[in-house]
Every structure is written in C-alpha cells, then in structure tokens.
Amino acid sequence: MPNPSTQLMNLVSVYRGANIEFPNLKAVSFAQWIEESGWGSSDLCQRYNNFAGIKWRDEMKPYGSRVLYNAHDGRAYYCNFKDQQNFINGYWAFLERRPYDGWRNHTASPQDFIEFIGSTWSEDRKYAEKVLDLIGSADALIAAPPPAGEMAISSPGSEHVCDASGGGIEALTPEAATTSAVTKPTVDRIEATTHKSSRNGATIDHIVIHYTTSRNIEGTISWFKNGLPRTSAHYIVGRDGALVQMVDDSDRAWHAGSSSMNAHSIGIEHVAADGDPITDDQARTSSRLIRWLMQEYGVQLDNLIPHCCVHTTSCCGDLFKAFGGGANKSCGDQQTALHKWFAAVPTA
Image (cartoon, rainbow, N blue to C red; front, side, top):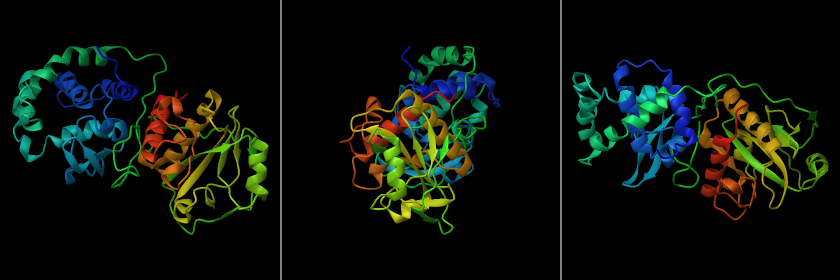
C-alpha cells in the first residue's frame, strides 16, 4: 500500500465515524477518493479538500465555494469544500444531479455502484476496475482503529475565486482547523504600539506569515514601537515559542505592504534570521494561533499566505524550506510549503 498523505488520513478519521445512507458503499467511495486524489497527494485535495475532482455546480453551495483551478485538462471552476465533513456530504449530494439519475438503483454492491457512476465520472474505460482494486486498501484504512488521541483536521474555506499563484497549492481548510474548538495560545507579553490604525469596518479574512530577519525578538519589538518607516504586526512568535501581541486583532497592523491587505488581515511575525527554519517550539505556538484565528474569524485556508504573495519580498524566508519553500521561491511555492507545514504540525 502506498503511503497515504496526512490529508487522506485526516479524511479517514472523519469518514470512519460518518453515518452514510449506504454503509456498504463506504469502502468503494473511499477507494474512489484514493484513486482521484492519488492517495491524498493531489493539489486539489490538499488545497481544497476536494478528494474526488468535483467540479463546481450550484448544488454544492451548502458545502463550500467555487475556485478557479488549473487542472490537467484545463482551467475550470472546482469545489472548495469548507472542510472534510462537507466534502463527504458534498460528494453524496453531487450524485443527486441529473447525470447520475438512478444511482440509488445500483447500491446493492460496490461493483454495481462504481460501474454505474464511473461511466459518467471518468472517460477511462478501466476506471471502475481501478477503483475496485483499491477497495481492500480503503477498507483496511477505514477499519483500522484510530491512534490514541487522534484528532481529525478539517479545512477552512469560503467564496474564493482564484489563488495568488494561478495554480494549485496543497492544503487543509475553513470554519475551524480542527473538529473540536481550539483555544488561543497563551499571550506571554503584550507590547502595545501606536503603529496601527482602524480597520474601518473591514472583515478579517486573511492571515499573513512573516519572518523578522533577526533572532533578536527585543529588537523586533522595539522596531514595531519606534522604528521608521513605521511598521508592526499583530503577533510575534519567538524561537522558544513565546507569543507577543503588539496590536489588537480588531485594529489594523502595518505589516503587509498593502493598505487593503492590512485592513483585512492578521500579521504573524516569526523570529528568525536569514536561512533559519521554523523551530519546533515556534511551530507549536504558531500553528495553534493560526488554527484559533481561522476558527475565530472564519478565515479559509486559501487565505493563509506568506508575505511574498502580497508584496515583492523574500518573506517568509526559509521558515518552511523543509516543505519545499525558501527565500527565493515564488508565491505559489512558498504558499504550498506553508500549507504542507500547517498540515503536518500536530494539533496538540
């Protein structure tokens, strides 16, 4: 069995306990998702919780939003599911559309089901055969007892038409980043700054990730209070995981190099010199803070971005180099790496 991705294992966790109308089809439907998503490695599943390559239709509005995506067969609108439970619900709702009329008459066996819907789902004549070959693996994953303390990760999302890179990015996603409520990590210090302004009623819908270019957290705090030009961020995460808040979430920090983005975003600085990766302690604090912010403000995963996706800069440096990012990488590569890191960091 190939190694399933973290994203796919999170979906297993959710689907394992899901109640569906036809329980005998749980393994074959999951096998289809394995086939469509390449064991959870596809861009579409990682970024949008879309494990089945489902294109956007208005019937999907209760489950997510549309996103313009560059797929192998061209650019089209696909479903950006709010989270993995909404993907599951959306998948079964998708079958209620006209092309699949009569599918309920083909639920007696997994083979009958996939042969019926497969002829419409894919032009590959061997599609049903490929899915059926994966049923054993799917059944084993679903039947396996969850690890102690297992926490399924869902994913953030709302109406978002296209991404900054114009292509696909790996991911997680929206109302909350976990299936249970996330508490805000302890703020160790509050260092109020006057380098801020009103949001003027703007809604928080982005989180922008930065690095400080220095390991001196006190220097960063001082700069955000007294430096010129006047800049700031809402939070600073130290190398040891300490969390400093400089600007209230309700106010606009001056961090993104864009007045519009500042109005709609939370900025998080990570103490790091050029070339430094994010530390384990930083990762724990930062990922929990991000999850809490997503939950608190309904930020979708698409809108968790590195600074370089807003402004011409090398920020966020090499924080996520281990995940394919790096100071000289493009917006798309850096965001992909950021999302891979976010998916990999333990939630506890």
